[in-house]
Image (cartoon, rainbow, N blue to C red):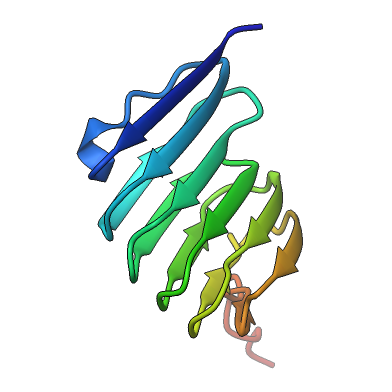
Length: 117
């Protein structure tokens, strides 16, 4: 299996593959990224990030205040370092091993109103 290693300064420069991707985001950014298949790792080096992720298995960040939203139900290892960090699960669940995360949220799926009697 091929591993792609790349350092980028913003999310628009990420070109994911179906193999294992190791991506280092060297500056703060906001947006979303899908790293497709493979055992993917994303390292965030900027001060603060607000990023929505799909198909990422390992996330590391630094000292800033990060908000990371996971959109799928992968098993994820998240080490968000210092700062006031928030990790938001998808509504489908998933398994997340966390470190350095101050807030963990899982949105409630919408519930239909109770039936009339």
